[in-house]
Length: 241
Length: 195
Image 1: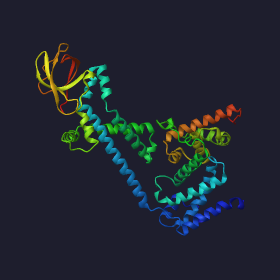
Image 2: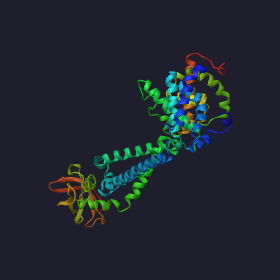
Image 3: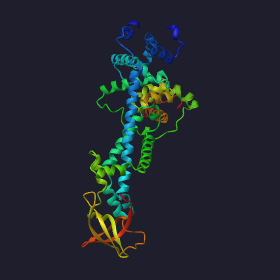
Image 4: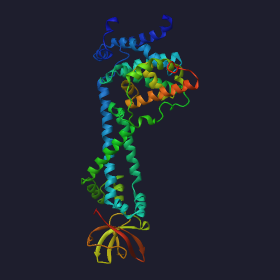
């Protein structure tokens, strides 16, 4: 029996000898504290990035008027899904997954079922995103982008907010210059970004327009482009930039 | 070492952290057989097991300042050992991901309690029969069955060792037990309670 356990006993003696001779030493507490701090810092950075991104997605949908597309029925939904910032959405999902994974390093994290933790992180990021979207953060950054004072990739990100749907989609975005009962004159947004194009007349034969629209309103129009006119089917007021 | 019998593992860890590093020998004495026995459930090569146990002790010693006092020392050292044995198993297997495949059991919560009546009735019986059918179980059931029936850990401690929710431990023990019974039925082996 003694012989059978001899190699293992020797290896334990070896470990104890190494401990005694300081060849095997304890990692200092500070090492683990730094490691923990680095992990917390990483979580904080990813959380900030994730909240920024989720609030930017909400801001871009709101500011571009794309969120209103859904009220235009199936064709509006189709354009909405085409214009939805999918790339940013998938980056956000990566951030959330990463965050969920990092939180599982903590005891409270692995005690919670994966799905619940994931949904919890998504909800938290969404609520934080909505709160940040209510602040002037993104409009201010958009102004910086307009002045070309932002570094890439932020400048491109914010410039994209101003891009309207393509004319082929049957959705037009612009600012009302003049109104009467049967038509509007609308300055359509420049597809290349900031500013407007030549004003177009928007005929409104198929819809009743109440007194809700005035000059200066930003609108989203669903309609057909016919010989220089837009024959509107639906029209919706959107938030000004 | 007899004078240390009444001292808890956590107490000894505290002494080591304060500089009495020679006390680590007591912990090696206490866990040597347990970890080797645990390793045998994963690996068959005795030398390999001994090497891994030695590495586990070295790693435990080096990282002892990272011991989380909210856990028990046994959960903590088994966590280190579990990872080491799983890595050892991965090196042996052709499919190294077989133990870490995504598991739907961890997705949602499961209400599973350690039923003391059921435990009393089935525990000893299961302990005897699991030894035979163990190798035929899926790894995710095998590991909880080993920890529950052989190492005699509670669901809570297994949850800390495997870093999965307690409810998931419960559901895996239950499913593992059912799977073992199926294995027995297939092989036409009757347990005492079937007779």
